[in-house]
Length: 358
Ligand code: AOF
Ligand code: ZN
Image 1: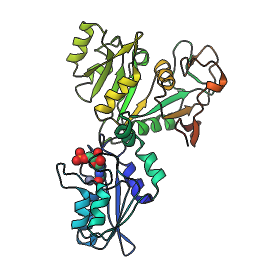
Image 2: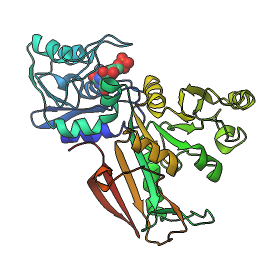
Image 3: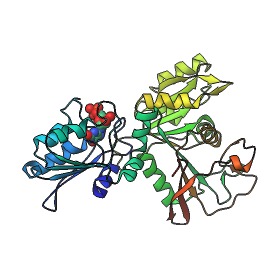
Image 4: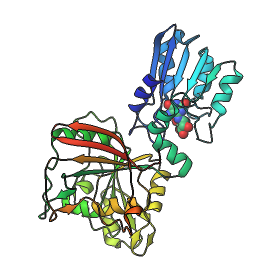
């Protein structure tokens, strides 16, 4: 199952709206087939592993990170494919919450006389597919906030200089992080200040993440890097209903997808924004700035993980803080994410924090 989970992880960021699933077929102690969900979400992992195993699948044990599907899509269900191939035993990590499956896959296998064990490495599998699980069960995507800060929590100097607070290794990891997400998101302040392009370079991306601009009043120029590249790779712009019509028409012409989001008290309703993104199939979103949007998402309880890159540099109080106002009345109200992982990246430190309860 650990092997199947590692294979599954290859699909993260490129299989939405589907989950990233891994499958390993073992016969007589030998791996006879390995598969993972392919870019775009199909073919499913089991189909790939069965194709590889051919006749050797007969009598094998299948380790699958998610319950095999039971529904007829463009191809027959994976549960049927496992039965037809003569697999003797199926071990799964999780039940698939998709209402088309949710237990039916396991039942199909058992009815066909296959031994099924469930719940193996369930915790790891839940973590791996937290995005898909959240989309299906809550109608929201899994959100990671990325911050690259100085040791004293600043993201730029007083004059706005931010290149570079972290080194090349950290920046490479940021690109890998983007690739493992379905979409990267920035607010209008960051877009205006940095004119980012947000594509993933150098890592052989099978699919570019969707680039999301959160821009209530459509302040960012359609003639920006995002606007100019919208025909090549998807750009989705979340804006308020009050955004001026000329800006809307100009953005529309770039090829970007405009998504109107309700406003309350002159602010975008971020929960509604994320729901509409999940409704379009996104499961994992990486928020890359800026401080106002990140703080607003945290205040609204919409953030799952915090990926923190700490550069070995001090900027001081005159620099720009990493987070906007959290509006805390007392320290007791302060969010306290849980430390999950630390890693040294050349001269910098990477740490991953989780807002979810352990
Ligand atoms: C599997 N193996 O590798 C994946 C599964 O739109 P479809 O027909 O591709 O079905 C998508 C659903 O299939 C998805 O919501 C989830 O329930 C399941 N994904 N199942 O057996 C896989 N990716
Ligand atoms: Zn399937």
